[in-house]
Length: 87
Image (cartoon, rainbow, N blue to C red):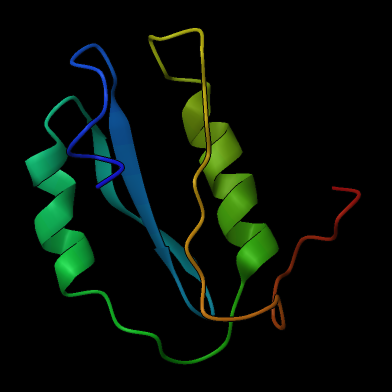
């Protein structure tokens, strides 16, 4: 619902993560590009939450819009990140 009812000017990217984060879809302004990928996402393995946030923050540097939000959907707490909270 978040993607379907967002502003037409918004842009999105998708990072999937379990034991390691991965850029699953680069920036797009088409929510449907991500919805299909989200539909098939599965919870499995460890949770590299901090690594995923770190990758997302680096990706955000390429955003065109000055207003930026990171929305995280996870099935658990961090248990295998290489990065720490301070990093």
